[in-house]
Image (cartoon, rainbow over all chains, first blue to last red; front, side, top):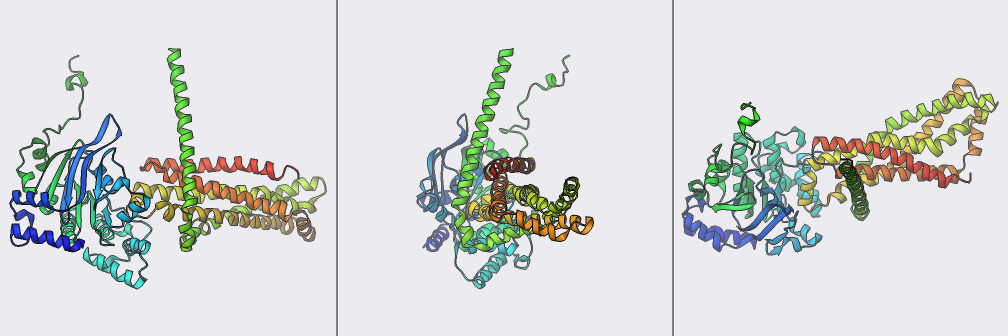
Length: 303
Length: 265
């Protein structure tokens, strides 16, 4: 059913955009139109979140993540991106508003309901979060063994297929400590897609990677999303890599969505904050200097 | 000035008290959750068996060697004292009762806290710091059921066994020094020991003690790891707290248990 819907979305895209449905080749207006009318897998409405009421982390977040798309949530560190991901995964409950995934309000689910939902989600953590006492093979097999009664021979074939998809079938006997950062991230990606989830969430998937690994991970996120008919949310501040492969971008600053649009719209945005972020300018609305006293005063130059 | 400092002190005491109570409540809830989530561990025994190897089998060397030396020292010291009263034939009784009632459970629990307890805290703390526990949660696998409960039961099962082996090695150490080295009569060493050591009063009570210590040490170690701030400093602090708190808990509980078990003996 989900695959069919995803295929339908792709067909719609092709009808609008031509050959391969790549959003980068579509008119921004048409893309926005498609996004507005797509069946959303994740719907966030009026979400406020805080630990300390005087310092809100997220304020009035409204967001829709359409099925079959790769959507990026961008923003500088501390802007509330990871918190938003944790709200979608049901690890946190919003103080106000609601997060719906596949039509279910996450914070209203009981523990069993939440775990049922999470079985259909995959998450890639910032540094992989591989289980260090298990081999690469066992890491990928972990969820299959926990949640299914599949025979070990079938699990073996499935694990090798997932590892093959990320190019690491030959590394299945290694331990996480024997992997490079990029390899660990790819294994974590294979683990995240182990049970063919409907929603894959990526928390800073590009952090600390060399340019080659960065390109490989970016490419895998797009290809796996399309191959599995899944929906992906990529939380990142790596602008150049993510703009290459996402369909839509939400830009968060201080817990508020300050901009949204297709990658092309973001690149062309005149919004100073977005412009500074996209082009990596050192000074702008986000100041270079942390708020401090007068420089001359600190150096005691007046005396 | 004085008033302000007094207020700050009172506030600090209040803060520490509330914080302490909160942590105790949290730890009790954590203990309840472990018991509640233990079903998975018993349905999948290989999880417990794997942890038994890490907590029990790998602690064997330190426990056996320590037991041997403690027994040998008991043999030497006991012989010196008993000889004064011409009762050196009671050396076996002294060694066995000291070990089975007190030294076996207490010293092996202290060693267990330092060797296995600290390792458990560091492992769980690092799993938390590297988001492995969060990853498990996101995979719809309860970390308490999958990671914590098997370690808890492995600790509880291995502790009495380690204490028994410590005592056995200690008795052997006492025998080596008393009988083989010093020349105490072998027959009276063993026969007096057999007559004096009561199964219910001494051995069962010793096993109960080590079981209680096993629960306390493993609970403290797992809680400290689970509650550790996810930083290098946080994990190292939690590991230290495990050893200190477990050691104090063992000695305090030992007094309470001894008072109940042996008051009429």
